[in-house]
Structure formats: C-alpha cells, structure tokens
Length: 154
Image 1 (cartoon, rainbow, N blue to C red):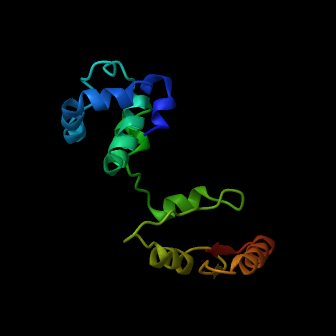
Image 2: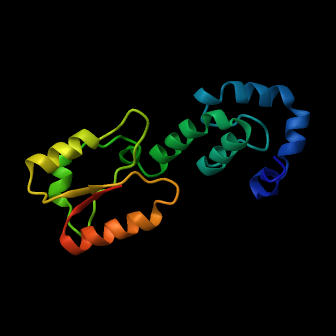
C-alpha cells in the first residue's frame, strides 16, 4: 500500500482510507460492479489507476478487472478465446513460424496433435516432457528436428 502512495494519483490514499474508512469499505465490497471511485480525491482516476487500485486493494478481483481494462482500452478481441482447428494452424505454420501451445488445466491437445501427425504430411515427430535437467536434451532434439525437417513437441 505504501508503494501505491508513491504514485502521484495516490499520494493521499493512506489518509483518505483512514478518514473515509466506511466509504472505502463500501467501494471495495462493490468493486466487482463498480467502474469508478466515488470518494473525494479519487473520482477522476483513469482506467489504469483504477486497475492499480484493484490490484492492491482487491487482488482476488485483479484478473477480472484486468480483462475489463483490456476490453475498454484495446478491445474485446484480445480477451476472447480464439478457437482454431489444429489443421488450420498447421497450414499457416512453417519451420520459421512454429506452433506454440500455452496449455491450461483441462486442455491437452496431445491426441489431436498425434492424429494430425498420423493423418498428415508430417514426416516424424519427436516428443519430450520438459522438466529438471531436460534443457540440454531438448536443445539436442530441437537441433535434430531443425536439421531433418521434423516436428518437435515439448
């Protein structure tokens, strides 16, 4: 909180919270539905400063508020899940433009990838689970794949 008070828009926040505790409690309790601060000295905060405020005072809502910030500032396109078929993605890839998956719990494209390898024109695919001390092995396998035009699944 003291770090927040070093930002020009928040120099009086500690005093404000001490003097207007009930207003701040009400604001924080309703933060999910609120897009502005209705407390004297903080009514003019821009979206970025509101995001900082939520990060410090309600970290449990930060991801939600970050998504709102992105939607307002640069557009919903950047927060919507884009769904593509693996075949479409593969057609756009090449040795200089690899396919990179960022996995999340419950999302495992391994079987779909193996199916694409079996049914497509992919010569061969190497696979390695990354973990402790796997870096040098992965580097060697990547080099092999680059040299022979193979696919690599890490």
